[in-house]
Length: 188
Image (cartoon, rainbow, N blue to C red; front, side):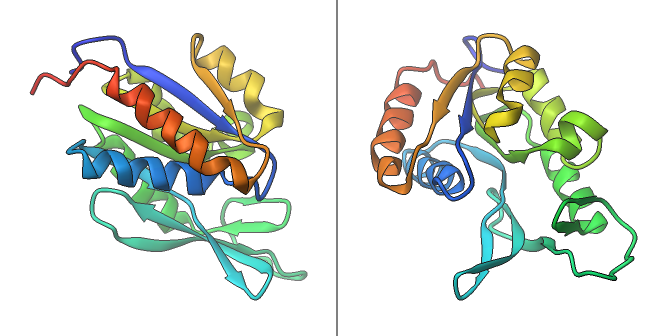
């Protein structure tokens, strides 16, 4: 359990603005400082300049699985979907089990909570529960701008960090690391 109140930061911005990169860089810096880092990153998979997939990266183990692929016209594969994307149900279950086990960590990262979670109750729902439970020092949760209000209603007092472009990532990572350095240590 944490010695002080947990801090939640909602990382938001339009597609391609550096949300995942900022979370990854902050997680790496804090891990280098001895923080226990847990959670899921969802880096894009590219084929040239086209985003063709989304991976799920377990921050504790470094294991990676395919989370989603571009939906193809005529594909009637069962499983969770959003416009343009088909999600792998087994990877979602894996992510949820990891997020369920992310108790009493220093940094919790949940990348990303979207329409499946907020509107359908599907997807990384254990990430929402872990954020509710507050068993961390600092949490970074990635949310698109259209869902920012819903996230702020669910987690009152959460700080919003809006990224306007990749050029802002280094300064925002520095800001997150400074914020983290002012938090009380976890009692283990």
